[in-house]
Image (cartoon, rainbow, N blue to C red; front, side, top):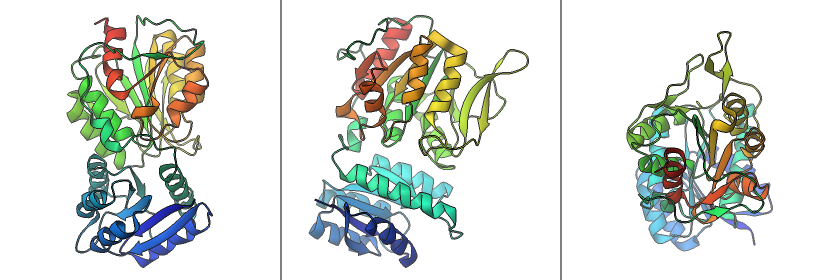
Length: 360
């Protein structure tokens, strides 16, 4: 049965672009189009679409106002927020995730060109993944209260010949994509006051500007400094380094033997830049057995090959479990390839890390 989609955008040009892309895939059926939030709410109630592509900025009722009304009248719909690549829209997109939106999509600029092809690919992929059976948990589940004691539900990967207790950890790396912003905020709220003796590195699949806003939110949630990584800086314990949009973030030794963060625009990996695999490969070379990796919710398999190198170099990998993921793609790739030591619900990851790394 085709995935039923409702398109909502006040721009006829953007609606046309989306319709052209989605109509090319037989697995997708556009059941309606709307040019305002009011129309979207009314149509969502009548059509009950699987996926709603919802513009943020519209005259009258905007997307942020329409979002909770759509979810109230059609709770099973997955909503993808569509926005321009601006700071205000990035901030609103992240706010929308906290209000129940499942994902976001940046619209192509008026220049069009090559980026339209990437927009088409991303749009179709997100609609098919979020409208299919790959979606496991609603976004709201990521905000469930975190436990304060050591993890009680640990699902070990069969035949994963990796020691349970971790000692001498010098760095933590996190990879995430769809559902990641919500999961990261929940994780760092639970980690507040812990793991201050090591640096933390994050690759979240996000465009420029969006990562700037995410870093600000993570700073508030974690109570520690989180910022987009800058080329040439030396990681400091207690800080969180986020790969900036459109740049791979890697750690390398400089001529003085110091570990230094560098950014590059080498080709995307797994259709992503930033991608988790380059980060994990570089961190594994530096930290070896003293690196712990967490693979959170996200579509695709970015992080899988990097996790393989982490294990080969003696490090440890933890994956978020299927039930608590918004999309069980990245963690699934790690689990099915037996590349992780433990598979945990999101709310158990912070207690597990604290218990294993700090011994409490």
